[in-house]
Length: 158
Image 1 (cartoon, rainbow, N blue to C red):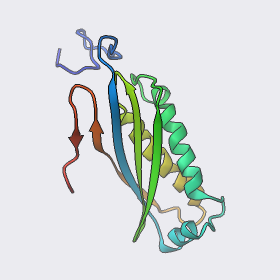
Image 2 (tube, rainbow, N blue to C red):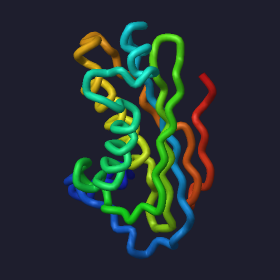
Image 3 (tube, one colour):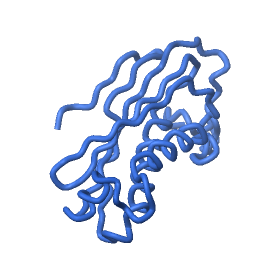
């Protein structure tokens, strides 16, 4: 067909067979950001959001989501992740989240890192929407992946 790995010869969607692939240590790093009002950002920094610990809750949500990526994204393999971390950085008009997912296995963890970031961002929105319903989530992207046959890949700067 077209060489796309998730399409069979008949053009139908399929889960990629990774049975014959060698295991390797795999790491994926993704990031995204949420912009918000100064009032909202100040409340999150001070721990004064109406629903409680925004970043702590977002961290747990991101980790939980990464572990369930195979249930959320069609055709993704369920993976036994070895580690998932989420780091938060305050910026002038919002918060940037960076998630790192890793395992030793036969398929990559890019989707797990991006699902972790996306879910953590949505959780921040949910936890702080009483202060600012106009928050904007964006810039979710893969920053780097390591492992597997293709080795290291890094996003272009910018």
